[in-house]
Image (cartoon, rainbow over all chains, first blue to last red; front, side, top):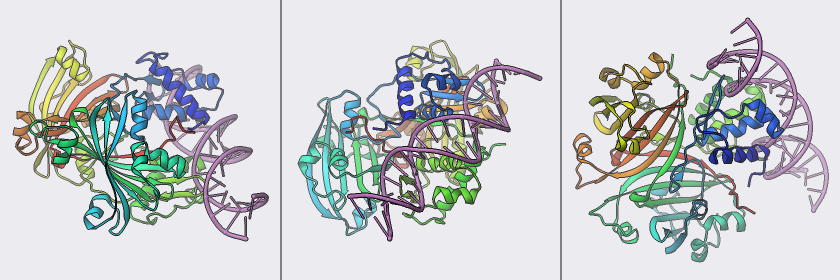
Length: 247
Length: 247
DNA sequence: GCCGATTTGTCCGTATGTATC
DNA sequence: CGATACATACGGACAAATCGG
């Protein structure tokens, strides 16, 4: 948990915005007054505010101030920008998350797996299929590929609990970043069966493919998360930069 | 166009990474040496590097350095994090983008539109449907709602060229941020007709709903972009923050 | 295991530019 | 025009992580 000063200020401001201590559409206190409030430097305040901008909580306006534009939103969403395990996400949204391991094996990557995952052919991997239930409903079917020598000792029991917890707290791995792509794909018979869908209804689902890297710069995980479309929702806040071609 | 020093350094480093002036998986020159190279302060370098982290180009490792993890990727993607008009996006990816206006009208929001868009009932709006072609194929069907009094004088002719260009260069509006949600929805007859799809094949499509705000803090646009699933691709780079519940 | 050099992370203070009112 | 507010940039100090001797 980041215990830095800017992060504490960021969380405090964020919470004040969420609880409407700062009114919607109004300007927050100026940077200079926040400096006094939090007894810190200008840079530290600006850094906290910068995070809030990325979150879509506020917009900064040169010469005017910082406006609160936060609106509460359905919490079923997967928010972009951060990496979260399934268990962390369900805890954050106060839902009951359960994971069932459908399949667990070791295998060696071939040409087909290389194309799909990016792991070179010949790499030794763990491959597993897991089904995630939220409030009792099977909503996400995961295909995970883990680099065997980066994740030694993985077992179905661990996979049922939390792999990220195992990686971070037992193996002391540092997870750094994850490149993700959202696409829409045709449903397969496997999807239909486990996600309890009917191809006469929706015949597609939302797929998040991700390549995750640790602090050694190695991609240790490739995952394809297949989401039931009627419960899928992915959020983002984009900030406008003046285009290169502008006057 | 941001002409600040940090931004110039950011672009220079980015370009050097893309052209492999810095080798993949290796560390970039240290901050101290970059300070000499670019004749600037440490903060300025750090800011440029921070942007590269957000882009997923590099990862920073305390005590070690900054590692290049950039891999070239298909350019059909919509990248997250920035706001781009359709014309800007097709220029960036060197594709031929054409827009056709299917429908253009003025209307007043009712309860149904309020639920869908967030514009209060009674608000006067422009409503338009536009079809975007990429390299001759109709790939995106847009439903746009614009706040009439924020976007006066909008015409079908402008909508065929570029509305954002009109907003920024004629009306001198400053577009600030956009809240977006990606979902998967059932195809409609309209989609089927204009996107030249067949519901026996894919019966869903990817939908990006966005609420866009200007520097007065008013939401002036609600748009629903309906994408042909076989050409849809949305990219993201996520950075791991240590979870709150960590030891 | 320890120490020192290197490198990134956090924080502070200050100065100047630019937009708003 | 002046006061206020955010944006950019500089320089310095110390902490924390890494690595080699």
